[in-house]
Image 1 (tube, rainbow, N blue to C red):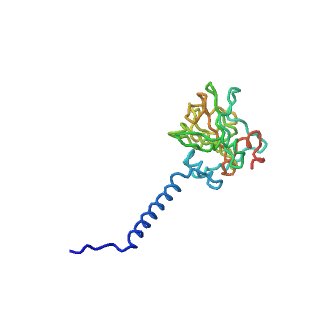
Image 2: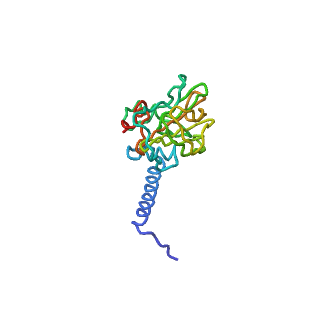
Image 3: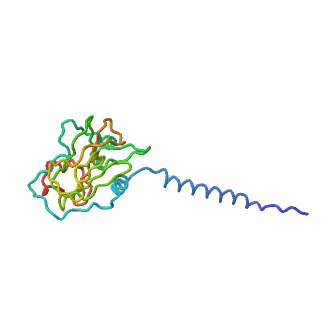
Length: 216
């Protein structure tokens, strides 16, 4: 029986097809699994998916007096900043210090992470309504407060809560104690604090010591 031979162009064609499939597969995996770059446009969606399951924070329709100055979320003088807010337009060195390392991944900090050697009281930065209290696997107890139609604040890594959903709180009222977290702090007690102005995630340092009419 006469053996059939493959034509000369068949094997090169097969090699090229296999090489093309392998190249496409590697490109796909690299793009979808290995690319850890977060663009400025994607930043907030990425951050929210890590720190908060809510797509958009709700806002209160009741106005806080515009002459009231926003206070800090704690009163103890033994509290310090562990991680600053991650500013997409900030210097690279500043951005690096604002990254949180968790589970083998570096994530941009969406608020300010405070820490202390001792348990400290967490307070409302302004009058408002407690809209939600929930437990998060990574961030512990999370509390959302609507302070006005312009300002919403979220407190993470809380310890013991002192208020309930639906409660009206006043500025500097103790709403909880600090809790523990695994967000790269060096001290035992922490608080991660976020601020939203007109529904947009905002650097909390631009909110403190301002009145409602000055918030942007």
